[in-house]
Amino acid sequence: MSVLAAFSVTPLGAESGDGSVGAAVAEAVRIVRASGLPNETNAMFTNLEGEWDEVMAVVKACVERLAESAPRVSVVVKLDVRPGAGGAIRSKVASVERHLDTSSPARPPEQLLAEPALQAPAPALRAPEVGPQDPERPTLASGPPAPPEGP
Image 1 (tube, rainbow, N blue to C red):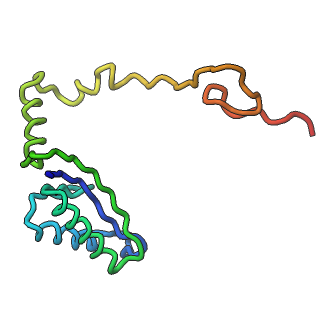
Image 2: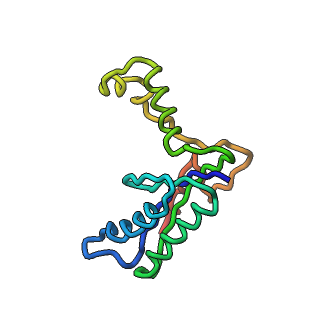
Protein backbone atom coordinates (compact mmCIF):
# COMPACT_ATOMS: atom_id res chain seq x y z
CA MET A 1 0.00 0.00 0.00
CA SER A 2 1.60 3.28 -1.15
CA VAL A 3 1.71 6.08 1.37
CA LEU A 4 2.94 9.65 1.40
CA ALA A 5 3.73 10.77 4.94
CA ALA A 6 4.40 14.23 6.31
CA PHE A 7 5.88 13.81 9.76
CA SER A 8 7.83 15.61 12.42
CA VAL A 9 9.58 14.33 15.50
CA THR A 10 10.61 16.63 18.31
CA PRO A 11 12.53 15.68 21.42
CA LEU A 12 11.01 17.08 24.62
CA GLY A 13 13.02 17.75 27.75
CA ALA A 14 16.44 17.57 26.14
CA GLU A 15 16.65 20.87 24.28
CA SER A 16 19.95 22.71 23.99
CA GLY A 17 20.56 25.80 26.12
CA ASP A 18 18.94 28.03 23.49
CA GLY A 19 15.88 25.78 23.12
CA SER A 20 16.97 24.50 19.72
CA VAL A 21 16.21 20.94 18.68
CA GLY A 22 18.03 21.22 15.35
CA ALA A 23 20.81 18.74 16.18
CA ALA A 24 18.33 16.06 17.25
CA VAL A 25 16.09 16.66 14.24
CA ALA A 26 19.16 16.37 11.99
CA GLU A 27 19.69 12.87 13.42
CA ALA A 28 16.18 11.94 12.36
CA VAL A 29 16.69 13.42 8.88
CA ARG A 30 19.86 11.33 8.51
CA ILE A 31 17.79 8.21 9.16
CA VAL A 32 15.21 9.30 6.58
CA ARG A 33 17.85 10.00 3.94
CA ALA A 34 19.64 6.71 4.62
CA SER A 35 16.36 4.84 4.06
CA GLY A 36 16.61 5.36 0.31
CA LEU A 37 12.92 6.28 0.11
CA PRO A 38 11.91 9.44 -1.76
CA ASN A 39 11.92 12.28 0.78
CA GLU A 40 12.17 16.00 1.29
CA THR A 41 12.54 18.10 4.40
CA ASN A 42 11.10 21.57 4.88
CA ALA A 43 10.86 23.95 7.83
CA MET A 44 8.04 22.06 9.55
CA PHE A 45 7.92 18.46 8.28
CA THR A 46 9.75 15.73 6.46
CA ASN A 47 7.84 14.16 3.60
CA LEU A 48 8.50 10.49 2.95
CA GLU A 49 7.03 8.17 0.33
CA GLY A 50 6.97 4.40 0.08
CA GLU A 51 5.09 1.33 1.08
CA TRP A 52 3.24 1.50 4.43
CA ASP A 53 5.60 -0.79 6.36
CA GLU A 54 8.72 0.91 4.97
CA VAL A 55 7.50 4.40 5.86
CA MET A 56 6.32 3.42 9.33
CA ALA A 57 9.64 1.66 10.02
CA VAL A 58 11.51 4.88 9.19
CA VAL A 59 9.24 6.98 11.41
CA LYS A 60 9.72 4.47 14.24
CA ALA A 61 13.50 4.51 13.80
CA CYS A 62 13.47 8.33 14.01
CA VAL A 63 11.42 8.25 17.21
CA GLU A 64 13.68 5.61 18.74
CA ARG A 65 16.81 7.62 17.90
CA LEU A 66 15.45 10.77 19.55
CA ALA A 67 14.22 8.79 22.55
CA GLU A 68 17.82 7.78 23.25
CA SER A 69 18.55 11.32 24.43
CA ALA A 70 15.15 12.73 25.41
CA PRO A 71 12.64 11.61 28.03
CA ARG A 72 9.74 12.30 25.61
CA VAL A 73 9.32 12.57 21.86
CA SER A 74 6.47 14.43 20.19
CA VAL A 75 5.38 12.91 16.87
CA VAL A 76 3.02 14.38 14.29
CA VAL A 77 2.13 12.25 11.25
CA LYS A 78 -0.18 13.02 8.35
CA LEU A 79 -0.73 10.30 5.76
CA ASP A 80 -2.05 10.20 2.21
CA VAL A 81 -2.81 6.54 1.53
CA ARG A 82 -3.36 5.88 -2.13
CA PRO A 83 -2.93 2.24 -3.16
CA GLY A 84 -1.08 1.81 -6.42
CA ALA A 85 0.05 5.42 -6.61
CA GLY A 86 3.69 6.33 -6.72
CA GLY A 87 5.67 9.49 -7.24
CA ALA A 88 3.18 11.57 -5.26
CA ILE A 89 5.93 13.41 -3.42
CA ARG A 90 6.65 15.28 -6.69
CA SER A 91 3.44 14.90 -8.71
CA LYS A 92 1.16 16.56 -6.12
CA VAL A 93 3.25 19.73 -6.17
CA ALA A 94 3.57 19.60 -9.95
CA SER A 95 -0.22 19.46 -10.25
CA VAL A 96 -0.65 22.59 -8.15
CA GLU A 97 2.07 24.37 -10.15
CA ARG A 98 0.31 23.47 -13.42
CA HIS A 99 -2.91 24.96 -12.08
CA LEU A 100 -1.07 28.10 -11.06
CA ASP A 101 0.50 28.40 -14.52
CA THR A 102 -2.78 27.95 -16.38
CA SER A 103 -5.14 29.88 -14.13
CA SER A 104 -5.64 33.63 -14.08
CA PRO A 105 -2.62 35.74 -14.98
CA ALA A 106 -0.17 36.56 -12.24
CA ARG A 107 -1.00 39.66 -10.25
CA PRO A 108 1.20 41.55 -7.82
CA PRO A 109 0.69 40.68 -4.13
CA GLU A 110 -0.73 44.10 -3.30
CA GLN A 111 -3.46 43.58 -5.90
CA LEU A 112 -4.30 40.15 -4.49
CA LEU A 113 -4.45 41.51 -0.95
CA ALA A 114 -6.83 44.26 -2.05
CA GLU A 115 -9.52 41.73 -2.95
CA PRO A 116 -12.60 42.06 -0.71
CA ALA A 117 -12.45 38.42 0.40
CA LEU A 118 -9.05 39.08 1.96
CA GLN A 119 -10.10 42.31 3.68
CA ALA A 120 -13.55 41.68 5.11
CA PRO A 121 -13.57 40.70 8.78
CA ALA A 122 -15.16 37.37 9.56
CA PRO A 123 -18.71 37.64 10.89
CA ALA A 124 -19.15 37.04 14.60
CA LEU A 125 -20.24 33.54 15.45
CA ARG A 126 -23.47 33.24 17.38
CA ALA A 127 -24.94 30.13 18.86
CA PRO A 128 -28.45 29.37 17.66
CA GLU A 129 -31.20 29.71 20.21
CA VAL A 130 -32.77 26.32 20.78
CA GLY A 131 -35.38 26.76 23.44
CA PRO A 132 -35.37 28.09 26.97
CA GLN A 133 -31.94 28.97 28.27
CA ASP A 134 -30.75 28.73 31.85
CA PRO A 135 -29.85 32.34 32.78
CA GLU A 136 -26.94 31.03 34.89
CA ARG A 137 -25.45 29.15 31.96
CA PRO A 138 -23.61 31.30 29.41
CA THR A 139 -23.98 30.69 25.68
CA LEU A 140 -21.80 31.83 22.82
CA ALA A 141 -24.42 34.44 22.00
CA SER A 142 -24.86 35.83 25.50
CA GLY A 143 -21.35 35.61 26.94
CA PRO A 144 -20.64 35.07 30.63
CA PRO A 145 -23.35 35.71 33.23
CA ALA A 146 -23.42 39.06 34.97
CA PRO A 147 -21.89 39.11 38.46
CA PRO A 148 -24.40 38.88 41.31
CA GLU A 149 -25.66 42.16 42.73
CA GLY A 150 -25.32 43.20 46.32
CA PRO A 151 -22.69 42.69 49.03
